[in-house]
Amino acid sequence: MNKKTLFLFVAILFFVYSLPAQQVRKTPTGLGIEAGMGYNIMTRSEKNRSGGDSVNRYNRFWMQPCLRLHYDITVKNFGKSNSLKVKTFLSYYTFGGKFKLPNDKGEYDIYSFASFEAGAGLSVDFNNMFQVSPLIKGHYVFTPLKRYIREITKPADNIKEDVFPFGCNIGVQLRFKYKHFTIGAEGWYGLTDILNSPGYVAKESNFRLMAGYEF
Image (tube, rainbow, N blue to C red; front, side, top):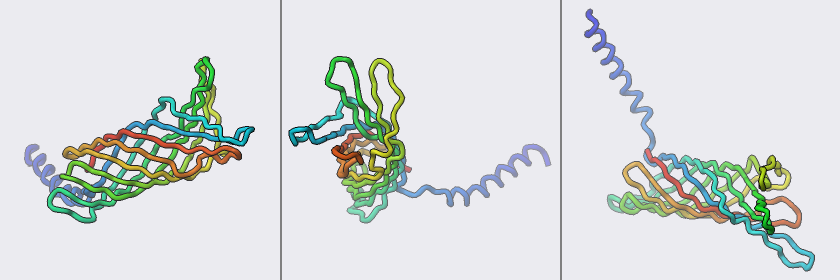
């Protein structure tokens, strides 16, 4: 057996044995990955001496990355290009807010809550390109930090004892899809208090731009 015949035989064996593996490993329709950036806003209120509410708005420009795995399950098709789906997802995201202290020294406070998210909702697809999704999600905060920034950034303080680890948000996502590639915008509103600290109430919102690939 010459070298060319041996090479051809091995190539045919590789091709034949790889076919079942390719069928088993076929990626489910609707599975996709996304990555993007989010702009965070947080309000923290407390009672002042006169009995009123003193509100600090953590709304300075501060963006954080988001990574997500989603799976869309088709419930019903309307014609050839419109459908109703159930969207489920798992994400990593850091929310919180950035506050400029009321002086002219360029001082900032930042609350930073690194979290895992899990959520679901309904999605309506139009023309196999446009998707609208009202969603609800829960999060678990695994690294809550508070940082102070001036000329030199000080080490962050872990504030685990002052934070509720679980929370809930409602939101909506608008998405455009071309072939397998997606781009979307979404907004989230926090329903629960973040800080487990007497006298303080904090709630957050965030807005995200996401790009992705659907298998």
